[in-house]
Image (cartoon, rainbow, N blue to C red; front, side, top):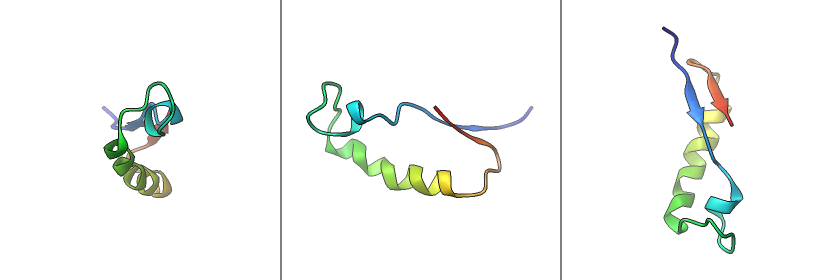
Length: 49
C-alpha cells in the first residue's frame, strides 16, 4: 500500500479575517509548515486539493 500526504481546504475563507468561514488567527500558524511541506521533494507524494 502506498502512502500519500493530503493538503485539503487551504482556503482564504478559513484562514483570512473578514471571510465568512474564518476560524481564527491561530489557524494561520500552519501556513509556514504547509509551505515547507509542498516545497520538498515528495516522498510520499503530496496531493494538494
